[in-house]
Each structure stands twice: as C-alpha cells, then as structure tokens.
Length: 97
Image (cartoon, rainbow, N blue to C red; front, top):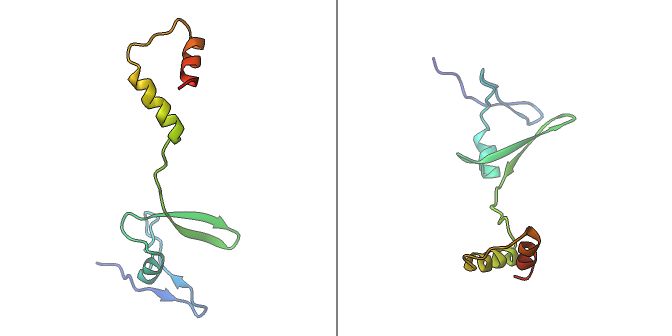
C-alpha cells in the first residue's frame, strides 16, 4: 500500500508534511524549485525559538595554502637531496624561499 504524498496547507499558508519512521520528510516541490534544491543538495537545519530554519548550502572548495605558500612548496620540491644538520637550519632555509 503506497502512502499518500498529498501536501497539506494550513489556513495561514504553512505547508505540512509527515515525518517517516526513519525521520525523513519530503520537501514540497514548490519549495525545492524556489530554493534550487535537487538530488544531492546539501541543506542545513538551524533550531529556532519557534521551529527550525532550513537553508540550502553551497560547498566551495578552498585551497589549503596561499599562493605564496604554494610557491615555497614548489621551490622546496625542486631542491632534491638537500639535508640539514638541525631543524633550525631547515627553518631558516624554508623562510628564505
């Protein structure tokens, strides 16, 4: 027996949906369209005094190093076979890159 997915709207305009036994809810199509939420979209839930705020999220990759740090890493990778007697000498060498 298939469950009804009919949406219910209150007099005040709130859209009501049913929570499944697994804690899932279906975001109504008109809301998904308005917020550009599709399969694989990330959303966040923020508890508020009167309910829960649901927001679509964007994940943008961030480089772990600055351009200056990448330049130092590239220069360091070109100095094959360089050895140091102690960590202070190595730190001085890296700071000069």
